[in-house]
Length: 295
Image (cartoon, rainbow, N blue to C red; front, side, top):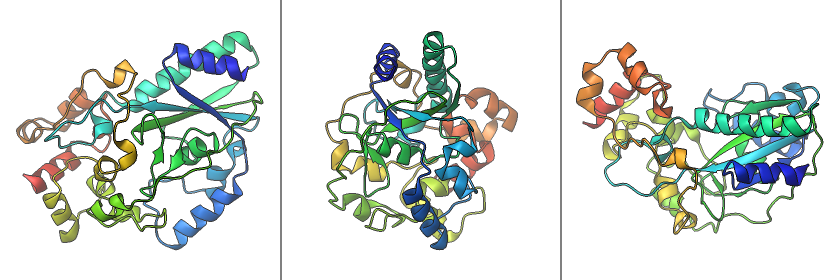
Protein backbone atom coordinates (compact mmCIF):
# COMPACT_ATOMS: atom_id res chain seq x y z
CA UNK A 1 0.00 0.00 0.00
CA UNK A 2 2.86 2.36 0.81
CA UNK A 3 4.31 1.94 -2.67
CA UNK A 4 0.88 2.41 -4.21
CA UNK A 5 0.50 5.69 -2.32
CA UNK A 6 3.83 6.88 -3.70
CA UNK A 7 2.70 5.87 -7.19
CA UNK A 8 -0.51 7.86 -6.75
CA UNK A 9 1.57 10.84 -5.62
CA UNK A 10 3.60 10.68 -8.83
CA UNK A 11 0.36 10.73 -10.82
CA UNK A 12 -0.54 13.95 -8.97
CA UNK A 13 2.94 15.43 -9.56
CA UNK A 14 3.91 15.09 -5.90
CA UNK A 15 7.60 14.17 -5.86
CA UNK A 16 8.13 13.69 -2.15
CA UNK A 17 5.95 11.65 0.20
CA UNK A 18 6.94 10.04 3.49
CA UNK A 19 5.29 8.19 6.34
CA UNK A 20 5.54 9.43 9.92
CA UNK A 21 4.69 7.47 13.03
CA UNK A 22 2.03 8.60 15.46
CA UNK A 23 4.20 9.21 18.51
CA UNK A 24 3.61 10.61 20.98
CA UNK A 25 6.60 12.77 20.02
CA UNK A 26 8.19 13.26 23.43
CA UNK A 27 11.40 14.73 21.98
CA UNK A 28 9.30 17.43 20.33
CA UNK A 29 7.45 18.04 23.60
CA UNK A 30 10.73 19.02 25.28
CA UNK A 31 11.50 21.45 22.45
CA UNK A 32 8.06 23.06 22.60
CA UNK A 33 8.14 23.47 26.37
CA UNK A 34 11.57 25.07 26.10
CA UNK A 35 10.22 27.53 23.53
CA UNK A 36 7.36 28.49 25.80
CA UNK A 37 9.72 28.98 28.75
CA UNK A 38 11.89 31.29 26.62
CA UNK A 39 8.92 33.29 25.30
CA UNK A 40 9.30 32.04 21.73
CA UNK A 41 5.58 31.55 21.12
CA UNK A 42 3.67 34.01 18.93
CA UNK A 43 0.09 33.08 19.75
CA UNK A 44 -0.48 31.67 16.27
CA UNK A 45 0.38 28.13 17.37
CA UNK A 46 -1.87 25.46 18.81
CA UNK A 47 -2.09 26.16 22.55
CA UNK A 48 -2.38 22.55 23.69
CA UNK A 49 1.09 20.97 23.56
CA UNK A 50 -0.39 17.49 23.91
CA UNK A 51 -2.30 17.98 20.66
CA UNK A 52 0.97 18.99 19.00
CA UNK A 53 2.76 15.80 20.01
CA UNK A 54 -0.03 13.19 19.94
CA UNK A 55 -1.99 12.70 16.69
CA UNK A 56 -4.52 10.51 18.52
CA UNK A 57 -5.96 13.59 20.22
CA UNK A 58 -7.02 14.82 16.77
CA UNK A 59 -7.95 11.48 15.18
CA UNK A 60 -8.66 8.76 17.69
CA UNK A 61 -8.04 5.81 15.35
CA UNK A 62 -4.99 7.22 13.55
CA UNK A 63 -2.28 4.69 12.68
CA UNK A 64 -0.03 6.64 10.30
CA UNK A 65 0.61 10.14 9.00
CA UNK A 66 1.20 10.59 5.25
CA UNK A 67 3.41 13.65 4.75
CA UNK A 68 3.90 15.38 1.39
CA UNK A 69 6.15 18.18 0.16
CA UNK A 70 4.97 20.72 -2.39
CA UNK A 71 7.83 22.80 -3.86
CA UNK A 72 6.81 26.30 -4.90
CA UNK A 73 10.01 28.01 -6.14
CA UNK A 74 9.25 29.52 -9.55
CA UNK A 75 12.37 31.66 -9.93
CA UNK A 76 13.88 34.78 -8.40
CA UNK A 77 12.22 38.11 -9.13
CA UNK A 78 13.65 41.53 -8.34
CA UNK A 79 11.66 44.33 -6.71
CA UNK A 80 8.91 42.15 -5.29
CA UNK A 81 7.33 43.33 -2.06
CA UNK A 82 5.74 40.06 -0.95
CA UNK A 83 7.25 36.71 -0.02
CA UNK A 84 7.66 34.01 -2.67
CA UNK A 85 5.18 31.73 -0.97
CA UNK A 86 2.41 34.26 -1.66
CA UNK A 87 3.14 34.79 -5.37
CA UNK A 88 0.81 32.05 -6.55
CA UNK A 89 -2.74 31.20 -5.62
CA UNK A 90 -3.17 30.31 -1.94
CA UNK A 91 -1.20 27.17 -1.18
CA UNK A 92 -3.74 26.14 1.46
CA UNK A 93 -6.30 25.69 -1.31
CA UNK A 94 -3.98 24.10 -3.88
CA UNK A 95 -2.32 21.63 -1.51
CA UNK A 96 -5.60 20.61 0.10
CA UNK A 97 -7.07 19.87 -3.33
CA UNK A 98 -4.14 17.59 -4.17
CA UNK A 99 -4.27 15.79 -0.83
CA UNK A 100 -8.02 15.32 -1.25
CA UNK A 101 -7.45 13.76 -4.69
CA UNK A 102 -4.76 11.50 -3.21
CA UNK A 103 -7.08 10.41 -0.41
CA UNK A 104 -9.87 9.57 -2.83
CA UNK A 105 -7.47 7.48 -4.92
CA UNK A 106 -6.49 5.53 -1.81
CA UNK A 107 -10.13 5.22 -0.76
CA UNK A 108 -10.95 3.47 -4.05
CA UNK A 109 -8.38 0.81 -3.21
CA UNK A 110 -9.06 0.55 0.53
CA UNK A 111 -12.71 1.04 1.36
CA UNK A 112 -12.05 1.31 5.12
CA UNK A 113 -9.56 4.15 4.57
CA UNK A 114 -10.40 7.08 6.87
CA UNK A 115 -8.48 10.33 6.87
CA UNK A 116 -8.10 13.93 7.97
CA UNK A 117 -6.20 16.47 5.86
CA UNK A 118 -4.19 19.42 7.20
CA UNK A 119 -2.33 22.17 5.36
CA UNK A 120 -0.69 24.59 7.79
CA UNK A 121 -3.87 24.50 9.87
CA UNK A 122 -3.44 21.35 11.96
CA UNK A 123 -2.26 20.84 15.52
CA UNK A 124 0.89 18.88 14.62
CA UNK A 125 4.20 20.55 13.77
CA UNK A 126 4.51 20.29 9.99
CA UNK A 127 8.28 20.67 9.80
CA UNK A 128 8.79 18.04 12.48
CA UNK A 129 6.61 15.62 10.50
CA UNK A 130 8.63 16.34 7.35
CA UNK A 131 11.82 15.61 9.26
CA UNK A 132 10.76 12.33 10.89
CA UNK A 133 9.28 11.07 7.61
CA UNK A 134 12.61 11.55 5.83
CA UNK A 135 11.54 14.36 3.48
CA UNK A 136 14.08 16.93 4.62
CA UNK A 137 16.36 18.16 7.38
CA UNK A 138 16.42 21.23 9.55
CA UNK A 139 18.29 24.38 8.65
CA UNK A 140 19.68 26.70 11.27
CA UNK A 141 17.10 29.17 9.93
CA UNK A 142 14.38 26.81 11.21
CA UNK A 143 13.25 25.83 7.73
CA UNK A 144 13.01 22.28 6.44
CA UNK A 145 15.49 21.74 3.61
CA UNK A 146 15.06 19.29 0.76
CA UNK A 147 18.11 18.55 -1.40
CA UNK A 148 16.21 19.00 -4.67
CA UNK A 149 13.98 21.97 -3.86
CA UNK A 150 15.74 23.65 -0.96
CA UNK A 151 13.52 25.18 1.70
CA UNK A 152 10.91 26.56 -0.69
CA UNK A 153 8.42 23.81 0.09
CA UNK A 154 4.94 23.63 1.55
CA UNK A 155 4.07 20.72 3.81
CA UNK A 156 0.73 18.95 3.95
CA UNK A 157 -0.23 15.81 5.80
CA UNK A 158 -2.96 13.20 6.00
CA UNK A 159 -3.81 11.40 9.22
CA UNK A 160 -5.13 7.94 8.40
CA UNK A 161 -6.40 4.83 10.17
CA UNK A 162 -4.28 2.63 7.87
CA UNK A 163 -0.99 1.40 9.38
CA UNK A 164 1.95 2.04 7.04
CA UNK A 165 5.67 1.42 7.44
CA UNK A 166 7.44 4.51 8.80
CA UNK A 167 10.24 6.17 6.84
CA UNK A 168 13.63 6.87 8.35
CA UNK A 169 14.90 10.26 9.46
CA UNK A 170 17.67 11.72 7.31
CA UNK A 171 20.94 11.83 9.23
CA UNK A 172 21.94 15.36 8.24
CA UNK A 173 21.41 19.06 8.92
CA UNK A 174 22.27 22.19 6.99
CA UNK A 175 25.95 23.08 6.53
CA UNK A 176 25.62 25.63 9.35
CA UNK A 177 27.45 28.38 7.48
CA UNK A 178 25.74 31.10 9.51
CA UNK A 179 24.82 33.26 6.51
CA UNK A 180 21.15 33.35 7.49
CA UNK A 181 22.07 34.41 11.01
CA UNK A 182 24.19 37.29 9.76
CA UNK A 183 21.60 38.50 7.23
CA UNK A 184 18.43 38.16 9.33
CA UNK A 185 17.29 41.80 9.68
CA UNK A 186 15.55 41.26 13.01
CA UNK A 187 18.33 39.11 14.49
CA UNK A 188 15.70 36.43 15.10
CA UNK A 189 18.01 33.49 14.38
CA UNK A 190 20.00 32.53 17.45
CA UNK A 191 22.67 30.27 15.93
CA UNK A 192 21.68 27.09 17.76
CA UNK A 193 18.77 26.02 15.53
CA UNK A 194 16.50 28.19 17.63
CA UNK A 195 14.78 31.45 16.72
CA UNK A 196 12.80 34.17 18.42
CA UNK A 197 9.81 34.38 16.06
CA UNK A 198 8.68 37.70 17.51
CA UNK A 199 11.79 39.30 15.98
CA UNK A 200 11.21 37.68 12.59
CA UNK A 201 10.34 40.22 9.89
CA UNK A 202 7.81 37.83 8.36
CA UNK A 203 5.95 37.63 11.67
CA UNK A 204 6.10 41.39 12.13
CA UNK A 205 4.48 41.98 8.73
CA UNK A 206 1.58 39.79 9.90
CA UNK A 207 1.35 41.12 13.44
CA UNK A 208 -2.09 42.52 14.22
CA UNK A 209 -0.96 44.63 17.18
CA UNK A 210 0.39 48.11 16.60
CA UNK A 211 4.04 48.06 15.60
CA UNK A 212 6.61 49.80 17.75
CA UNK A 213 9.24 52.15 16.33
CA UNK A 214 11.88 49.42 16.12
CA UNK A 215 9.54 47.19 14.12
CA UNK A 216 8.52 50.05 11.84
CA UNK A 217 12.17 50.85 11.13
CA UNK A 218 12.78 47.20 10.38
CA UNK A 219 10.10 47.33 7.67
CA UNK A 220 11.40 50.64 6.30
CA UNK A 221 14.94 49.31 6.00
CA UNK A 222 13.79 46.00 4.49
CA UNK A 223 10.73 46.99 2.45
CA UNK A 224 8.24 44.15 2.46
CA UNK A 225 4.49 44.14 2.73
CA UNK A 226 3.95 40.51 3.65
CA UNK A 227 6.49 37.88 4.63
CA UNK A 228 10.27 37.78 4.30
CA UNK A 229 12.56 35.50 2.27
CA UNK A 230 15.98 36.82 3.33
CA UNK A 231 17.10 33.80 5.37
CA UNK A 232 16.09 31.53 2.49
CA UNK A 233 17.48 33.68 -0.31
CA UNK A 234 20.97 33.77 1.24
CA UNK A 235 20.99 30.05 2.07
CA UNK A 236 23.54 27.99 0.06
CA UNK A 237 21.09 25.07 0.06
CA UNK A 238 18.76 27.18 -2.07
CA UNK A 239 21.31 27.79 -4.81
CA UNK A 240 20.82 25.82 -8.01
CA UNK A 241 17.61 24.22 -6.80
CA UNK A 242 14.97 22.97 -9.20
CA UNK A 243 11.98 25.01 -10.26
CA UNK A 244 8.74 23.52 -9.02
CA UNK A 245 7.13 20.97 -11.27
CA UNK A 246 3.69 21.83 -9.94
CA UNK A 247 2.07 24.04 -12.56
CA UNK A 248 -0.33 25.70 -10.12
CA UNK A 249 2.64 27.34 -8.39
CA UNK A 250 3.85 28.82 -11.69
CA UNK A 251 0.57 30.34 -12.86
CA UNK A 252 -1.33 33.55 -12.07
CA UNK A 253 1.63 34.97 -10.17
CA UNK A 254 1.55 38.30 -8.33
CA UNK A 255 4.85 39.89 -7.34
CA UNK A 256 3.79 43.22 -5.88
CA UNK A 257 0.95 44.79 -3.95
CA UNK A 258 0.24 48.32 -5.16
CA UNK A 259 -0.28 51.08 -2.61
CA UNK A 260 -2.67 53.17 -4.74
CA UNK A 261 -4.88 50.17 -5.41
CA UNK A 262 -5.11 49.02 -1.79
CA UNK A 263 -5.61 52.57 -0.57
CA UNK A 264 -8.60 53.16 -2.83
CA UNK A 265 -10.54 49.90 -2.60
CA UNK A 266 -12.82 48.84 0.24
CA UNK A 267 -12.23 45.96 2.64
CA UNK A 268 -15.00 44.06 0.86
CA UNK A 269 -13.40 44.62 -2.54
CA UNK A 270 -10.02 43.55 -1.18
CA UNK A 271 -11.52 40.25 -0.07
CA UNK A 272 -13.20 39.79 -3.44
CA UNK A 273 -9.98 40.38 -5.39
CA UNK A 274 -7.55 38.54 -3.16
CA UNK A 275 -9.48 35.93 -1.17
CA UNK A 276 -7.58 33.21 -3.05
CA UNK A 277 -4.17 34.62 -2.07
CA UNK A 278 -2.19 33.65 1.02
CA UNK A 279 -1.34 37.27 1.84
CA UNK A 280 -5.01 38.21 2.25
CA UNK A 281 -5.77 36.32 5.45
CA UNK A 282 -4.89 39.24 7.74
CA UNK A 283 -7.04 41.65 5.74
CA UNK A 284 -6.67 44.93 3.87
CA UNK A 285 -5.97 47.17 6.88
CA UNK A 286 -2.81 45.29 7.82
CA UNK A 287 -1.54 45.32 4.23
CA UNK A 288 -2.23 49.05 4.02
CA UNK A 289 -0.45 49.64 7.33
CA UNK A 290 2.69 47.97 5.99
CA UNK A 291 2.46 49.84 2.68
CA UNK A 292 2.17 53.13 4.57
CA UNK A 293 5.33 52.31 6.52
CA UNK A 294 7.49 51.41 3.53
CA UNK A 295 6.28 53.92 0.94
